[in-house]
Length: 208
Image 1 (spheres, helix red, strand yellow):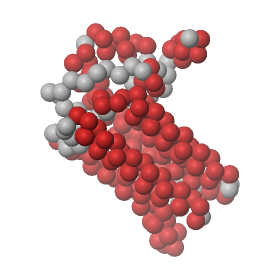
Image 2 (image 1 turned 120 degrees about the horizontal axis):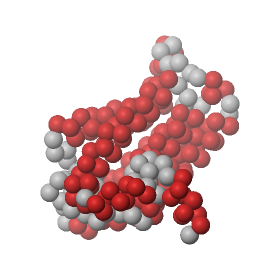
Image 3 (image 1 turned 90 degrees about the vertical axis):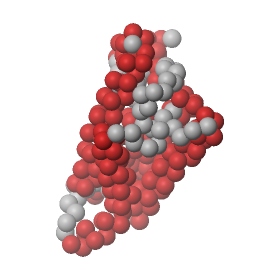
Image 4 (image 1 turned 180 degrees about the horizontal axis):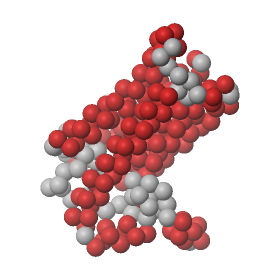
């Protein structure tokens, strides 16, 4: 149990510490915030959902102690397999490595929120060659790792909140990108998947 809880706490610190470090790096390079402040009610609601996800992600190892004692936390069968802990750690590591790949590919174009008055480059290299929102995919992989580490109904609930939030966020970002880039973005969408690669694009990438 200690290994599982420690891995979850470490994943929160490493991932969100990395987000803050990257935000600071981008701020220093572009001379302004990479849209950390929500601009409207829609973005504030998204920030609330992120707060729930991050709080649940970070708090579950501590919530578990009281939940197990009170019977409020329900475990699913995966918990009895010790290998699930190592699978969870592997997923978390792969998810964070993928996130760093995204940071490298985006460079100074990385943003947290959408500023409709700003125009950055349309990134189509690295993981963005196949997927339009790979950061959200890699976040989901990390949270699947958390489910393996602490397989409770609560961790599944946190994953579902995250998935709903990224669907909404991805749609909002694509509306902005379509408005800014028009036909270029439409062509980009035809050859990429939103969260998973299109099979045709993946096959083409492998052969090239």
